[in-house]
Length: 57
Image (cartoon, rainbow, N blue to C red; front, side):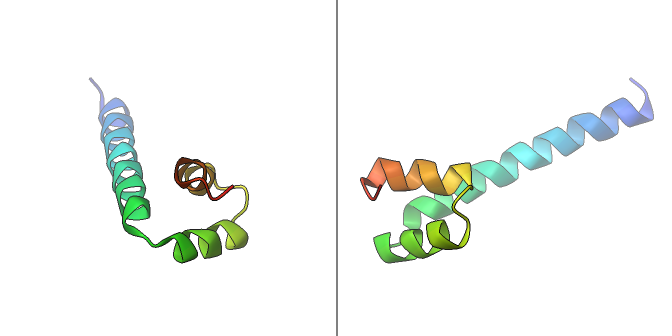
């Protein structure tokens, strides 16, 4: 593997880890905080997914 292939691979791993952490943190938030985040970023698929899971939308 060349240098740039390694950079891409590590970058993808870091991004996936960050997304998993974000999903976990969203689950810890209160319903009210989830609603606020959804209002601020209505197109964020992670916020929408969590709100649907909770039955908020």
